[in-house]
Length: 139
Image 1 (cartoon, rainbow, N blue to C red):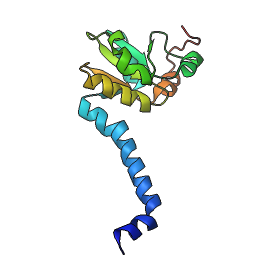
Image 2 (image 1 turned 90 degrees about the vertical axis):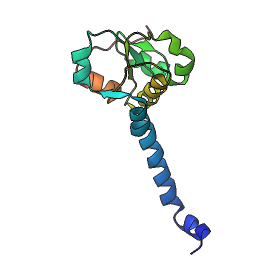
Image 3 (image 1 turned 90 degrees about the horizontal axis):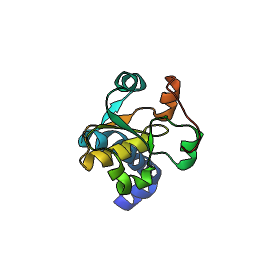
């Protein structure tokens, strides 16, 4: 079997393997290499009184549908351009809907020199599940 025959016969498996590898890189490996730590809802609840900035990286529609009252809204696509809006002298906790986009944003912030940076595991679903407060609207 030639390499081309192999690729044609197993193209779907190759694609799935590459997709899973990319997802693992974005969600698990890259954040760890950059020093990002995951924080659960219960851990966040315990640290909520410590100085930090909570950054919500979801879209405007998701934000309006419900967000943490003390969060700063910076969509993921704007994080590089607007990172100066985040206090550099405090810890940064990044949240999204599920933890995927926040992992990417947290990695970008850590690579830009912000420390410590935390990814809120489980996103707003975990936030609401833990009974933490939620505000609706654009403010």
